[in-house]
Length: 473
Image (cartoon, rainbow, N blue to C red; front, side, top):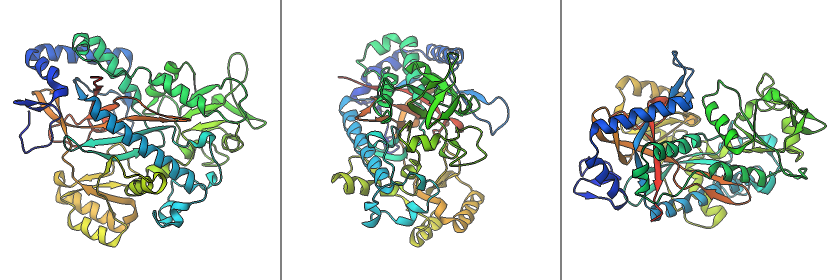
């Protein structure tokens, strides 16, 4: 599968297969390639029939695309997952404490642990949230923490997603596809279930109902509409939770409360799982030209008459320029050492860091602090001199907009590609729910870079997904 001196192969070498993959390796040896190809095509047909798509509106052609699904699962032993889960809970607790602090007393800024200018001068910081504590003190109700693995023992956090993380619908559909297409293989393993996620999400959302809610909370999912790249997920989660999927024009505010229009008349909404960016939520508070939001929504939120999940202003916690300070947040708020490691990061606004980055562009990964989806990024070892010259100019002109990190040798998993079974780089996005308690769904969304040698796993950049198995024994 891979050379001994190459990236960490999670299945192991052919002469030394790692324990969690023993049955998978045996299954792959016994499965003819034509049958694997048949299963791959069946999976594609299934996903197309169900309508599991994502949308890309920037490249022309048909915007609705299938995310390639690889039928070889990624497997984690229970002990590996338990440690990872503890680290995820620790990190989300610290990020949530940071949000409560920077919109409250700002102890961490006064202590000099995080530079004040990087927070208060950041476009993701929302001064409108100052002095407001959401129900249960929960800001980031749904977090997607991107994890990479470099060896048998160490998981690194690559990125924190605290605003509107997506991908959980693919995690759920991937498992459903595996159970349908390969029931015998699934039956050979005792898998930790993931199907309870929608129920857990609904419980989390209900647990943070606002003080003004006196009866059973009414929850709805707020979407920008069918042209959003994650619209499939919005409608999927609303359906799975048994709640309404609404757009801004389905809602209105009356006497400080939020209502949705229904065929039976107006119905009050207590909790909105919003998948709309802060800027577009309320034209009276944020962008006045927004046609997606609800006039008066933010005032109702501040008055404790509706809960928005995730909270407004959570973007300051997942800004890439704030990322290097998360380990210090864990120490500051929790008095603990971080369980999960951060990737060493250079802040280009620092003179010494910027000098090093400009001299080593050919070795580093450079990212826009507010970039996403694999865009606005330079992978040094795979770049041309012209690419590096462009990024050097950008860094010099706007140093605060860029960070840089070493090029990581992401772990690989066996993947069925056109050439057969081959190692491909993967990452992992586990989903953490945070209300009156923290819950972590076992596994998460494994994304795989399908192109040989590629480190970019994003679906918009040609990546695919795998089912992620956590073994119960």
